[in-house]
Image (cartoon, rainbow, N blue to C red):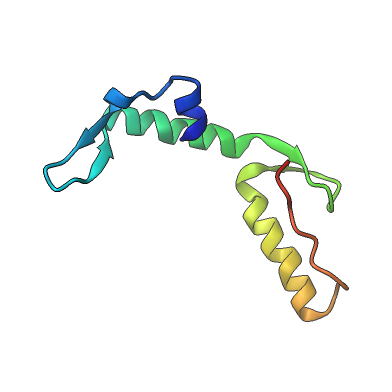
Length: 84
C-alpha cells in the first residue's frame, strides 16, 4: 500500500470515509491494490540462507519450514529473513 501511495498510484481521493468514521478503498482502487499485491508475490529474490531464488509469496512458507527444522533440532539455529 505504501509503495502504491508513494508512486501516486493511490491518492487521498481513492479512500471513502464512512459516517461511522471507518475508511475504506473504492472498489476499483481495491482491485489495483490486489493486482499489485499478486504481482509482488511473484517477484523472485535470492534467499540468503537457502541460496535459491524464491518467490516473495513463498517466503512465509520457507521461513516456517526453517523454524520447524530448528524446533525439531535438525538445525542449530533459526536463520531469520531480514529485509534490507
